[in-house]
Each structure stands twice: as C-alpha cells, then as structure tokens.
Amino acid sequence: MRRPFVAGNWKMHGSRAENAQLIEALLLGLPAQPVAEIAVCPPFVYLWEVGRLLKSSSVVLGAQTVCAEPLGAFTGEVCAAMLKDVGCSYLIVGHSERRGIYKEDDALVARKFMSGQSAGLIPILCVGETLDERDSGATTAIVSRQLNAVLDLAGVGAFANAVVAYEPVWAIGTGKNATPQQAQEVHAHIRSAIAARDAKIAADLRILYGGSVKAANAREIFSMPDVDGGLIGGASLKADEFLKICAAAQVH
Image 1 (tube, rainbow, N blue to C red):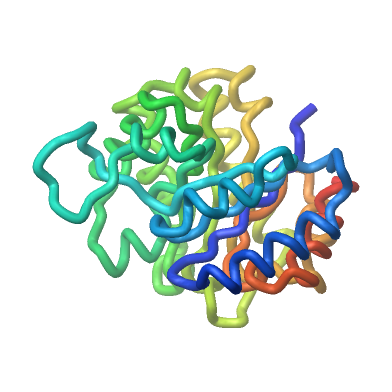
Image 2 (cartoon, rainbow, N blue to C red):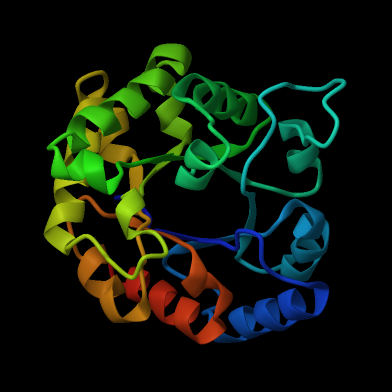
C-alpha cells in the first residue's frame, strides 16, 4: 500500500523568524508518527537551519531545484551532493515555474532527476499542462512527453525511488483547480504510462496532485484512487492550512 505524502513547496518565501515560527507550529500540530509522510522544501539559504529545526521530528527536508552537474565551475548553482550533505531527502525537479520562467526543457529536467538520484535524493518529478494545452486536448500528450524524457534517460527502474507530481499549470496560483475527477484522469494516465514499462513500479509509485490544494478541497482530491497526496504551494506557508491538508492525507 502506498504511503500518502504531502510536500510543502515554500518557493521564494520565508525568513529565519518566519521559518522558525512555521516549523514550531507544524511540529506542535502534527502527530508524533503521522500516517502520511510530510516534507517541507525551503529556499536554499534556509535548508540547513530548517533541517536543524526538524531534527528528531518525522518531517523531512526537500530542495526546490538543483544543478544538473555534479560539481564544478557553475557560479550560483547548488549540486545534489550539497543538498544531501545539508540533510535533504527529497528534490523537486521540473516544477512548472522552472520550466516556464527559467526555460528548463524536458532534457534538462531529466538530467536534474538523474543528478539528484545519483546523490541519494528522491526526485519529485513535476509534470503538467498549460491552459491552452488542456483546451486543445493535449494534456495526455504533454504529460507523456515530460514523463518519457525521464524514462528514456533514466529507465523505468529509477521510478522505484521517485515521486511524480501532476501540476496543471493553469491551476497554480490562479485560484482555479482541477476537479477531483480531472486530477484522477491524469494520475491514472501517469500510472498507466509507467505500468506499460513495469507494472510493479507503477503500482507502488506515489503520484501527488499539485494545483492549488487547500484545506477545503484536499480531502476530496486525496480520496481519488490514484492521488497519493499533494505538492502544496502557498497553503504550505500557513501552518493551520497545511496541517489540515496533512490531516486530510492521513485518512487516504
């Protein structure tokens, strides 16, 4: 049985004081041994300190992106081994903001996925379509293309130690949201695409939904058979809201 998973992507938010307050509230509000796995993904500069605040807790640490190169003269970049060294367990790759704003293509995302895995991190691979792509009926083609870039480079075996997050780009920070049924359709497609290469890995793969999840809609979305939790953006910065989302995942 797949363990539910909720990961909070803080994006470019936070301060030392705000982070300490948020973590304190999360740790007070979560069960000592939650049913769902919980992760938080702060900006690079706060990883070490947030990791220290999480020490001895059940909440794990993740990073928001990584350099595809293992080491070297890449000013301003952070490699996977460094993220592992400061205590990260997870790594987000291919987030729509990285793909859209920073023009990271499928090939680069696949390299980042492999770079993270080679250092012992578990990648959270983000896939998803824009509103124009959905309206034109291209959702499954776009998601398949993004998945295949990683499958072709890393092999299906890599997904035995990875997570996939479906994030409809049109539902991120817009207040719009895919219906639970729309989310389920794409999640089922993702699982089917992996199953075409390895049924066992597909059955065990955790697939998260990442499009404007809130406390008000989390339980209904998480109740879908192929939705194993959420990649949470803005709501992960509000302790009460994030705790309610985590609670919704406990009963998945």
